[in-house]
Length: 149
Image (tube, rainbow, N blue to C red; front, side, top):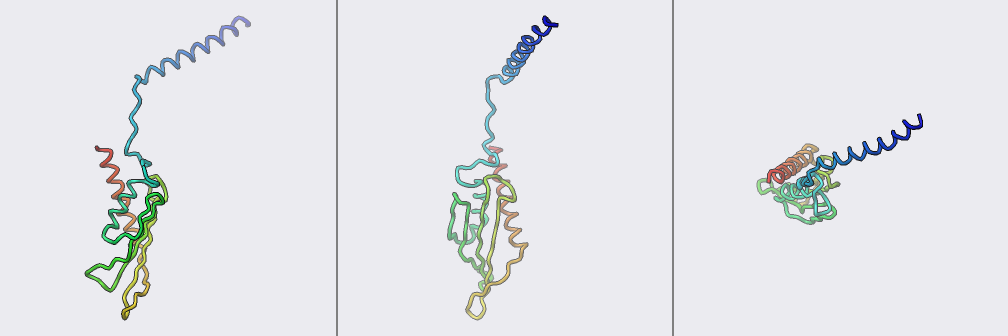
């Protein structure tokens, strides 16, 4: 039994060494290229696809603030020329570096003109949800284009 035990340990070590060498040879010396279009690619403080998609989506309104490090976009009041008695203001906040639905928050304010005074009015929840959907769809498309190139 003592002879068997003394041969088992070196044999096990030799087996591990051979398996390690075999696995190392599988790599072929070439490292896999990083996916440049990964969800977290960003040289700014937030997900770059969400940032670009957000800017494109709210580009119809004048920008008041755009902070890429903090992920905040604030528009100034915008009145649609076909409905000058109503105006909207939006704030887009990107909360994460990942391209995920919960990494985006849109808030909107609406005012209507009543006798020359702007009065706050409710914004339909569906409107804010639709803006978020548009931004997410554009961000995913930007990512798909980056992968294709």
